[in-house]
Amino acid sequence: MAPKPASRFVYVSYIRTTPERLWSALTSAEFTRQYWLGVTVDADWKVGGSWRLTYPDGRTTDTGEITEFEPLKHLAIRWRHELRPELKAEGWSLCTMDLEPSGDAVKLTVTHTIEREDSKFIVAVSGGWPQILSNLKSFLETGAAVLQPRTA
Amino acid sequence: MKDDVVFRALADASRRKLLDRLHARNGQTLGALCRGLKMTRQAVAKHLAVLTRANLVSWRREGREKLHFINPMPINEIAERWINKFEQSRLSALSALKTHLEGEDDRGAKTRKSIRVRQLHSDHS
Image (cartoon, rainbow over all chains, first blue to last red; front, side, top):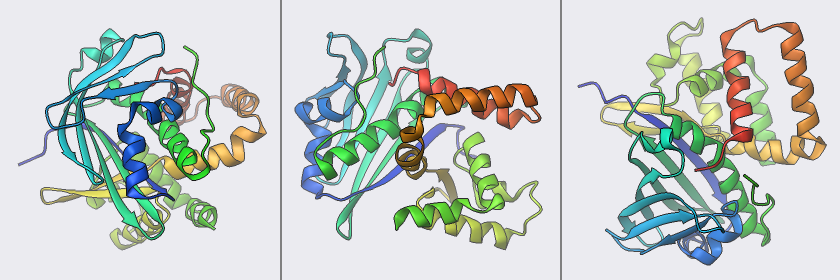
């Protein structure tokens, strides 16, 4: 059976830190504000918990639900964009994050998938993820994020 | 040290071509990547192994298929370390001008440019 056409990105980053620190950087609103390009992640961190991204001015850019939650190892979020109508129209995507110790680092794999071909949403997130993840890496490795929040 | 592995992996036209193909269509099998190339399947597999070691390509098993994905993280790190520092905005303006003056000779180049520009301007999600 042929798999359904889907749009997907896979990001793999090796970060010199511990699974504990990386996990708390991914799941704490206070941490995310410091590297997620000005956006804050707020969530009820458990399976079935709600999840959202907000700008400092209070606008919600993305909403979702935690669908899988294994502390220090694995996280899956059902995720939809809310601000741009053409992206919202594409519906729900799935974002997974996997942490795996690798020497003195942690291998972080982030995937973002939507079950449709040539997704505009996936193209849009592909502009953000590499910056967010490289910011996260410098934040954890050096204590400071390199890229400042983007202005709209 | 890690940069060396990435630069060496990128210092080969066949491997850059494979990255271009994954950029155009992410998540391909070895068979799909071989299609239309003048390389043997073994050569493509070897190049993919070099790209995977450099963390430029990752793969996942889906059902019976092994799908390859481009991993933009090392290129992004190189861009931050080696390009942004040297005024990327001016350079990309110049390279856009060069592309414009020389004319688009293939659709791939045009697509890449428009994606790059979109990324620079896109709101993250």
